[in-house]
Image (tube, rainbow, N blue to C red; front, side, top):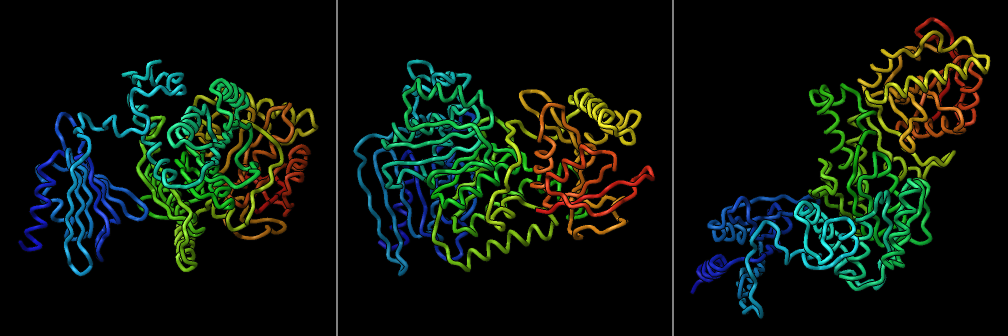
Length: 555
């Protein structure tokens, strides 16, 4: 029998049996994917062959009718050198050497393997239905006897999906103790499940730290960890930017860390040389704010397209920057645990890439930023080699203002005007400035930001990227002519000293260069700018025709 006939007969036998899983590997020159994994799935009552195709950085999915299995495998074996298939009752291994020699091996399976009844077979789950997992019971995903609550089945699948990513990293790692830092752990049910996976499924010792800004959440999670007897799980209250580990962890996890918080988490991971990184980014505002409307027409002509493009470009830059630090990086599709459209996961594994490859990745990241005229915090941190020092410890968050914030914002401005008058400043913010219409416009344009803590708004400001026409002429000189953001209409509620400086530092982290002006009579603002390290540059004339003192600070 010829090689072609033997190959065809082998593939025909594989296709004739109920498939459990298959892996196509050892790509030949010109093959598009590094490997392909297949399994049967049931969709709307019909069974399909699902192929998951892996490049160096991405994974793509394709569902094909099962009757095409043999022809699909024949096509793949023209491009790949090895096929491993597990079917019900038999296991196959088919190899084609570089010289074209064919090896075909078949073994009877020791146990019958059943075909799945649904898209996700329970027997494939790392946490199968029927296993009693205390965090999942308390979360309401499992009943006390381990059955999946019907309304929570999606969440059950999503948790297992995340554990698959984790398992791909840790299952073959020989370390007896696994150390993990989970940045922005939030309610932390996933942190508990990661601890369970490491200790109960892998059977290893776990040392896990969960970090979050909310003190009440940290206190609750610490009590729950004590209840479960999870002695290797600790929760700390703090900011990602300020965290210092006693020793480098094996893995860094960051799920839904907002905007530049993801960059700070990735920076820590890269500086520590963590072996593995799992990151699901969220709310990538920085590049969107720094990229001008003319950067990439027609995409940047439309707000929603610009926002989505900048989110993808941000993650592409992050992936390349991690590659420049020697990581093997994949950007994968991830079913988000909070059912949001933020469904990309960056998975990185520390490798041994050449200096040439690292430099190429860095050039590609910097080239994209340069073409767009945008900024990225991870790039700045890796370039600077350190995390900016925070001036104060605030546990709230800064976010874009929304129309529902309007009344609280106007109250903050009313309070700001009153404190100006009390300090002797009668020249600035006269009448009803800033007016309701002006703030509504700030919100509509996405330029208004608020600091929120414990459900209350404590500060508000406008941050506008790009050249301010009133700054074109100055009696003096700016520090330089680099791109900048301008802060206007900033005020913080009385009783929170340092909050204004905190907001300015946030703006500086985002833009890298901030210009701002204030009235000579505004002693409070001048003092804040001086304490924040801003340099006095001269006098500009504002829209009302009155002089203002101008300041600038660069990262």
